[in-house]
Length: 354
Ligand SMILES: Nc1ncnc2c1ncn2[C@@H]1O[C@H](COP(=O)(O)OP(=O)(O)OP(=O)(O)O)[C@@H](O)[C@H]1O
Ligand SMILES: [Mg+2]
Image 1 (cartoon, rainbow, N blue to C red):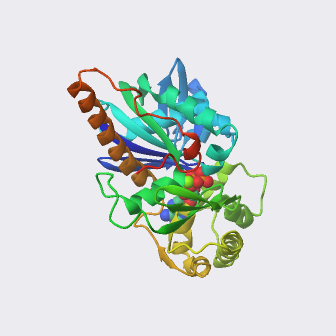
Image 2 (cartoon, rainbow, N blue to C red):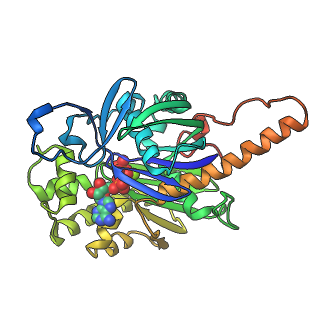
């Protein structure tokens, strides 16, 4: 069984597998056929996923291939376009769909804390579990998803730091109070974790993601978000140091305000926004907001997905043990399949795992 970490961000979807990390823009569109109208033109590059009789374009060129889904509602995670994006990305990330997979999916903290959090986590788990017949770029495949666990996205960032490759906790990590600052596309999310549990007082979020910086730099707040992202990635929208430093100052002020009472021993910096700040030499503005040590993971964009994969490895091992135990006692099966939805206490970080 292949343990996989899936971090479906609002801007980029990240998949961590045994073979490495796979990243693509989270765009998804219902394909609109243009037939001969496209003769002689090159169609924008996108991955085409055919599922349930419908055809979706996902990834970079998707907005050029049809009507884009750009929902920010929590319920979007349960809609078919999201499912096509998730399964398509997993299929793209795997060399083959021969082996069944076990997924740990990261969802936003704000969603899991909200009223609908439990329902959405449980619904997503049900939708993803099972065998899916789909066609990815013309290739038919059958993807068997054996287990699905839902966790909060920043728990992945914590796990990448705290667990070894087998998903076992490294010595001493449970005691430390660790702060996580995740600068994503849409939001900046703060969380504190100690021993795999959330420090509720440190949880906060603000709409201060990369998108805000790009809107500021473009001077056009009516531009579709996928267009902003595309122009920035393609180099036709640039940001200058003034914009970046103003943005960094805003993020630092937000962190200072929200963590006034907190003294994390270590702060881990994650998300594409952190990669961007580093590129522009503006990380120190943010680091100045913390008294303790800061850690910049090797790749701040994929660290969350990698950590979710480590969690998946640990959970798969636990599952195997459960099965072995069931066989040994001759029951055939032990209660539950371990694929709990975000349990109430896990509303923010997942249960007290590891
Ligand atoms: N290496 C990089 N250099 C500069 N900018 C980057 C880099 N990598 C990513 N970004 C930018 O950071 C943005 C946010 O990346 P990230 O994947 O962390 O967001 P997300 O997880 O999709 O968003 P959210 O957490 O809000 O759902 C990307 O959309 C991109 O514009
Ligand atoms: Mg993110």
